[in-house]
Image (tube, rainbow, N blue to C red; front, side, top):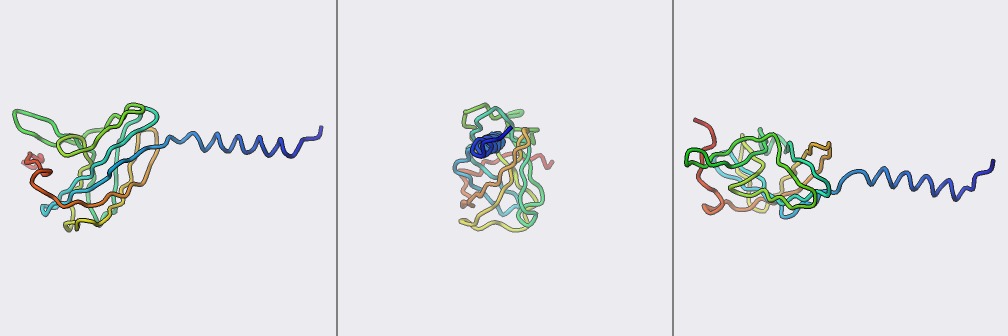
Length: 154
């Protein structure tokens, strides 16, 4: 049986394209980081997944922050508190905003305050196993974006 070389090549390309198409494409908009002089900071952005997934972890170079956690701000006994969460649900096709006062990526044990305009490389890990690298720009911290709340240190 003779195989047509063009058909074999076409079949191989189809299999390769199908394998590459299985990884979902994450859309990341407006990634930014806030750094405070108290050794804490946070990363914010808008995430959209084509298929339902969950942001379960994030990491940065240890020279930026010693600890990185996925957090949510909750109202408890009339006080806004941050708490670590197992993940941030990302419904298929719906933008989910990580923002001050809501879901965010908490950076702690920061040895130095980051300068506005600097860039921070974050690696986001999703429940599906997908990992992406995101470059976020440091913005100047203001009283408007730095809500006073309990960080659970007491």
